[in-house]
Image (cartoon, rainbow, N blue to C red; front, side, top):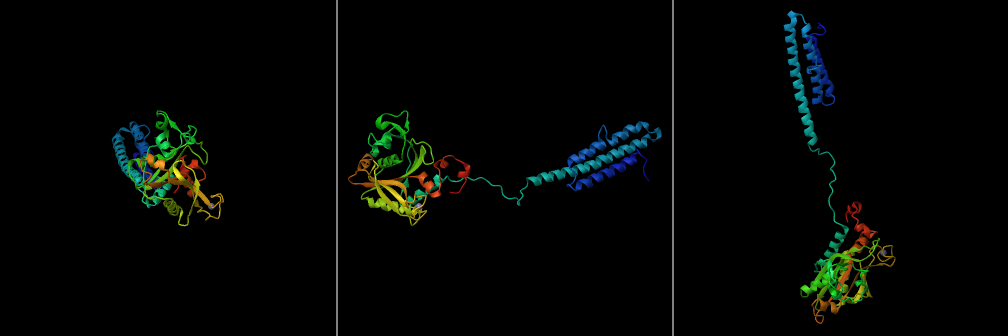
Length: 359
Ligand SMILES: [Zn+2]
């Protein structure tokens, strides 16, 4: 039997069917959400337009003898609506809480997020490799200041007073230094560390001196006002040129591979006598000639020589009793060579596309 329109009974049936339909519809998208239930609450219990409120406003039109029954019926309906909506609301909130928890939980099936890790700079890798080659020969690593005096950078190393390197055109001088040998400058090589090492100890000495050095060069693919050197010094009784040659050959094999050979050619540096340019056989073409070695089969990698007696004496070492050899190479140049880096500036520009490689 269909209840009369506008009756409480009709509203009760409508409440039941509407809520059931809402639950059914929402099932496809995972169930009712708190906002859906709130909408139903407004429709049924809202103070202005709610169905229950509308029934109550009709109470005054109900005949006197039916008022009590009608009022009781509306109250029962209101209670029923509140109970049913409260139940749906609790379910919806539990569902929302579970969804929020699930979103926080770790999904082990997701691919891992790339976590950026630091890498060693190619200059650091090459420096450490060079150090490792010499540590195997009993060398230790020494460090020294980058701001030096003229004495340590030039004069003690046998540079003549009028040597062009001492010119302000080639060297960065620092304000606040004294005159002559007390002038302050940014070291142009790591040789001052060799001098400081000799001063501080007695032979035998076997040290490596890596570090930053400065020269007034314009920046271009092959030059930079700051670059990196690795120098080495050996001082002991009976050290000869044969030891120097053997050491350079051992280093070349250790660093460039077992087939690498060295070739020495005479040259001049103020702090050694004799001085040599050291080339290593091209490991890229096996001495057949290629673009990297300019088709010569050899690549110049360092300067070297027997330590000048004046330099030993300036370091407080008796040149009548001791002899020694020294060598120096550019870490930047070796890195460019072994990694095929075409432009020196890449080493200093901190471009992540360059740095984020495994060297
Ligand atoms: Zn070659």
